[in-house]
Length: 258
Image 1 (cartoon, rainbow, N blue to C red):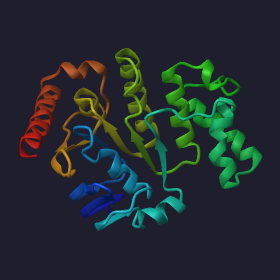
Image 2 (image 1 turned 90 degrees about the vertical axis):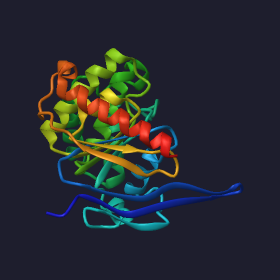
Image 3 (image 1 turned 180 degrees about the vertical axis):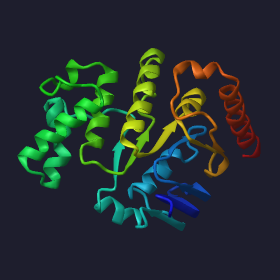
């Protein structure tokens, strides 16, 4: 079976008034269907840039990148992915249901189908009964869950998540990590997740991609041996700590080589 996402010798250089900025350099990565892949590395190392390339929002300047066997632009037009940003990005004048309906309206779904999909995705993220609330009436964690529901509403196979829990406190973040794992298990989506947190990357992922400072390169790819079902206290296990150490070593090696 072909990878859902495949990058081969991927480069991206931005031309600026101060000269070229090498955002990504010789990135090689395959992501299989149903994997949960986290990207971790220092700020500016190209984690978000890689996600934006997958989404067709940035154009690589070298190498190849395919998404579901298509170019990223073709995959974007085919609605192959949903995107969750760092901020929830909900429109304050729309209800939660209205925010989730927005991409469905753009895509021309029928009224009956829009109602069904809003109801189903709210249930997926445990926001039943909040359809008529406005974003300002929800906590930060609930707003992010609504943002995830919006990304899931049109049933894309791939979910791209750009550090969606980075601004939340640790207690809320832990709960949403648990909920996200449960959601992934139920939907079997392919997840790409950007984070700066080593424990978050290790807890969530089947594969951890460690990136080095600019130009962004992959310094290590770690296939997690942890079971698919992971209670929070697995973070105290020897296996978890060993993976975390390997991630930390990879980050340190990347910094020293930069």
